[in-house]
Length: 88
Image (cartoon, rainbow, N blue to C red; front, side):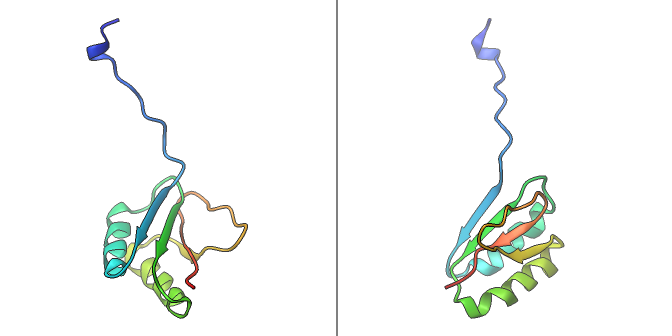
């Protein structure tokens, strides 16, 4: 077998994970809007105080067109959804 011509298939990702800090909310929203719905869960960790997370989740859902919710302890993220880590 000619290894120089071999094609290696990468395994499908189990999820998409995104982390951001200062300046991140706009970048994450833009990324999710460009990404659209994907066949895996999207997990977002954004450095925000807990009081701002719910509004951020609503903004992401509105701008991306993808179902977004705050992640809950023990929840199993579903394909095609965005879960945002609770602030704190």
